[in-house]
Structures are given as C-alpha cells and as structure tokens.
Image (cartoon, rainbow, N blue to C red):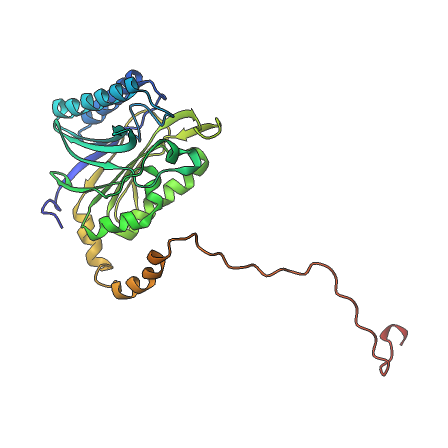
Length: 311
C-alpha cells in the first residue's frame, strides 16, 4: 500500500449538464462546479465523462482543438485552486479518436487513461478507438486508478487495480436514467469486492442517442462509496458538487478484517480462465428444455378394473 494511507481529505463529484458540442458552455459550467467544490474544501474533484464536448459523431478539427484548450484551462484552474481535477475528453492521434481521462494536479497532468470498453449500444465503438492499457498512479492523495463509465461493468479491469493496491477508483460517467440501478449497484459492488473507494461522477440533463436519436435522460446520481460499500456521498440530480470525506485508512482496515487477497486461489483461477483466454468466443448459453404445453392423451381404461364413474 502507498505511504499516504493515513491521509484524510474531501472528494467531490462536480456533476453538470454536458451540452453536446458546446465547449464554451461546458467549460463555463465545469469551471463554476470545480470552484464551488474547492470552496467547500474539496481536494479531489471529478467531472463527468467527455465533459468538454459530450459524445459526438464525427468530431471536427475545430471541435477537437476547442476541447483540448478546455482541458488545458481546467489544468490551469487546478493550479489556481491547488486541487486535483479528473475528467475525460476527446483525444485525437493519427486519425484515431479516444475517450481519454486526465488527472490534473495543481497545474500538471500527472496521468491519462484511454477508455478500454466502448459502449456499443450507443455506437461509441464506431466513433472511438479503445484504449489498451490500465492506468494507476501514486498521488499526494493516494493511489488512484482510472476507469470511464462502461468500464465499471468489467470486473477484470478493476480487479487489476485491486492487485496494484489502488485505494481510489475514479470513474467519470454519462450513465442514463434507464439503467441507473445498475450504476448505483456497480459502484457499490466494485468498492466492496476490491476494498477501495469508488468515486463516480455522473452528468445531468438530456441528450439524443448517437445510435437512434432517442432522447436519453441523465439523473445526476453521482456516487462516492467507501470500501465497506457505504454510500458516503450521492447526487440527487442537482448541478452542484456531491462531497464526502475520504479516510484512506479504511482500505487497510477492510483488508485486515477480510483478508481476501491472502485467501485467494490464483492457481485455480488460472486454470479456470485459461480456456476462456484461449477461446474468446461468445459464451455458449445452455439449451432450455422444451416444455410440453398440450394435454397428454388419456390412457385407455384398464378393462380388468371397474370404471369409478359407474360405481
């Protein structure tokens, strides 16, 4: 575990309504939210996924340029306020687009992560390229691991962070109301099974789906969960910071109470998973037996016995 495990500080989710393609409005809203969180003594402030632009189809060169400048402005703001800010935005490299998360700490970008699992139900995989590596970093506030929205459905990534001693999983997100129960349960599950804090910032507002134009509503239900699975901070749809106190010693305390790292069976897991790794096809679902719904033909009466109806 990193040496900062006795650290106590305030974390905030700066949930805002992300206006698709409107970088100037989003920067103004994000700046106001970060300032409000810092005013309430937050040291770690998390913004939603793709906060400068939202998820856009076929981004233009000018939009990419604006998005980069908005992220630079946020890095400068982190220096002005003396805080750490995390959020994801649009990145372009050699014609490929990525959903990239940055940690800016007191004026410096100290870590980046490209979203690994792209959300195909909203055609994100048609617009973006997936990241191919995980990111965790030791910071003045503890060891932080990064994930973005849909990533939290994939326990393999988060389990990797558990094995790397991550204390804080930070998750910028755009998670719609229709599956909000999944978001709330997954943030708790990842915190409990990996004995870490989970700080997930979800946006507010509405936006059309990239796939079919359906209007999606975003509930602003950000979550801050401790290693016990207790929800210590939660958004209620408001465009204002959700805050909670983070006590890193709780990670170590949970590991002492429930020593799951020591009680693992890695040799068994390796054997179980090897077949999966060697054959990465869709899982084969079991066949469901057909249930006969028609009435069976009546059996002929036994001639040697009297008919009960005639007795």
